[in-house]
Length: 79
Image 1 (cartoon, one colour):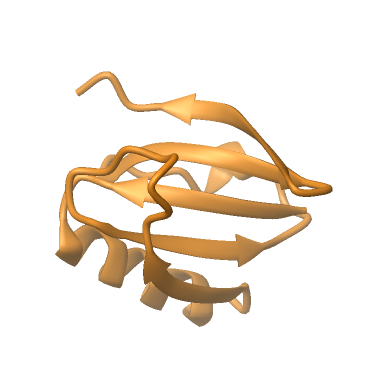
Image 2 (cartoon, one colour; image 1 turned 90 degrees about the vertical axis):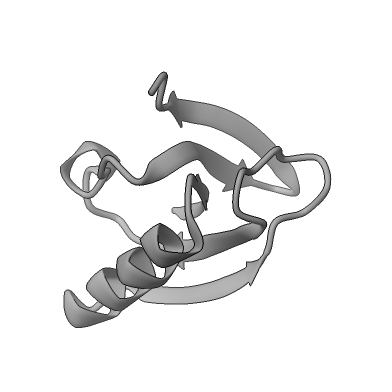
């Protein structure tokens, strides 16, 4: 499954990208598309089959599931 995560800070996005790569998940940092709000302006797009709940962290703002060009909000940090 493919996901896009937005973050509260640039460092949060960078650290999360490093974490995903460390655990073997293909990931890339990219500018946040305009249709997704973000505090820091960068996002991490990644693909994984593992339970997304096990890799959510406190630095995330939102996580979207991307399917066939559509997105579905599956997590929002109410921090």
